Structures are given as C-alpha cells and as structure tokens.
Image (cartoon, rainbow, N blue to C red; front, side):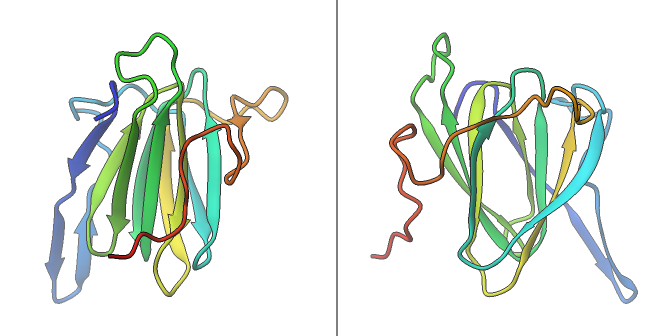
Length: 151
C-alpha cells in the first residue's frame, strides 16, 4: 500500500425502506478535517486522471456503479515512491479510499452504467488558485495502462 493511503471497508445497513452507508466520520482514525463534499461521475469506459494535490486529502466513495481507482506515488521523498495501487470500488465493494497530498490518482468507470463518486476533501476548492496538478491519462508521465486486463 502506498504510504499514507488508507482504505476503509464501509458497512451498508439495508432494511425494507432502503439502505444507509456512513462514508466519512470525524472520529475515523484517518480523518484530517472537512473542506467540502462534491460528486463527480464517469460514463462507461471513461478514464478521468491523472491529478494530484499539494495540500488536499481526498476521501473517495463510489456510490453508484463500479470504478477502478488507481493511485501512483509520485512523491520523491516517499518510501513507496513509484508504487501503484489499484482498487475496485462501488456496488460490489463498498470502500472509502483516503488519498494523501502528492499521490496521483485517477479512475475509470468499469461498469455498464454511469458511475458516481462522492469525494469528501480537506480543502474547499479555490477557484482563483486551484490545488490541482494534472497529467494526461494516457501519457508517459505515469507508468500505467488503463486497458482492461483479461486472463
């Protein structure tokens, strides 16, 4: 596991009315602080990536569909520099992935329907000076191929 990344298996509580799932709690061991909550989506087969933050922690939960979430440790001073982690999150695997600053990340919708991610971050988005640094999803900057791996 990339240094500073944590994964929490989320408990889904169903009953005859529907279901409930806690995503982020202020008493979670890896909770840092609250900045804002936002939703993002991807259509089937679409890759959104790569990007990282210098200050912000992400807490990503896929609440609809399935996503492959991939992390790359680009931090030069990290003991896991250059390491890649893949997570399959969503309907069939309710998890929260906490991503620290400096870790590049992206995701791909791997299901047949639009996938929805709820991200609780530690910093509000600064429209004047965004804490967002990008790489192309299919370039040479990060040694990862988003193609499906059959076999």
